[in-house]
Image (tube, rainbow, N blue to C red):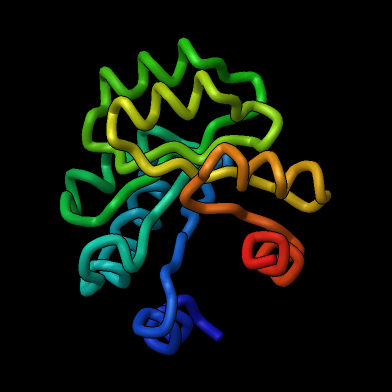
Length: 156
């Protein structure tokens, strides 16, 4: 299934988070092509039905120039800190939110993001402890390899 087919099939039945992957060895023009193509496919979305994320902040800045209405989420690396989050939010207020490793999320980070009215996503929550931590902190998006388990814990 192509990305376009996937978006066409699921855009009306659930919320989607589409990640733009960039490789360090790729030329920047290749990143821009991927961003433009992805944003063109996502563009018909309304509100936060489809969000776009990336670990590459420059790609998100470019994506915002291409389609400023699409919600963009910056994926944090494990070595980034709350100070990095403060700096990024100040420099890039267009960001819809941050997606953090479950190991990096805590009450202070939640408070910072909520004070900026940002969406909070976490990855990759697979253990009971990780899923409980995310649920207790009230994240908006919980990424897991075990979605049924996460849903059962949320609803149980």
